[in-house]
Length: 394
Image (cartoon, rainbow, N blue to C red; front, side, top):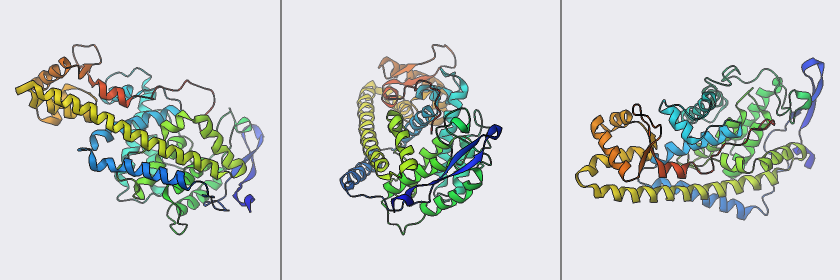
């Protein structure tokens, strides 16, 4: 029975007539089913942590002040796994039309991730989590910059591989292109099959691995596979707002992440992967709750200081409100959104600078960009780029 969990290999002719073995995974769910005995406590802990995170939407006055930056932090981390060197500050500078500290291709790739994530979240109320939506997300993810020549929005029609310089020395060779649509169809059916009565967190863990194993696009599979976790949790109602992102956990434990994905393919060991995945859900959700509370504490303390400004407090608080949502900003954008005049915004920023709440980033006298530094520092924790390596990501 255990062997029914295992996939099979087919021989393909690669570059130069080299014959290599491509992996064909069995459809989900695993057979025999994932053994949850011994994992019930961990599953309950993960659910409780996710519930606490989801509950922030009820207790935080304006959850969107956090979501704008959370989404961008996830974009940075997920793209770093793929090899980009951009930081959260780089992305926010780029969005403000200021020069980032890394090559523009890197930060443009991260910006595309933000667009794909926001597109998907807006589409979920009108579209099921389907192959159509996955293709549309991919089109947004590779809209321009690196990868724009890798058929954005189209499932691959040629062979790809992971690691190495060719399929013959690759770490992993996914199914041939002729198998992709069939196996994606099985995956879509599994996503919408409620007869299995699987806990949503288990289903999300299974879907992520299967998508990465099929590797249906020429580029962007890793980023899109990580996005699917959040979309599945939101589509199922496990999360009301997109607050959970596992890229930091996968980045921190990337060697173990890759090893466990390969063990599922090699030995059918879904249980070790699910333990790792549930631990990531629990730790990430707990850390996100703690981060949100720290951000709320910092902003509340700074708000009280601003309220001591007297007559200047009103406009300064409006600027401060904008800085919480977008911690890197320009005078002109704050004026446009708030309705305050540019001189009033400029004066308020000066007041906030004197309180050491905002700082100027560019050192220029014109086209200056400001940051809510304490807020940005908390958000930027653990986002240092990975050292470049020769091994390709999953």
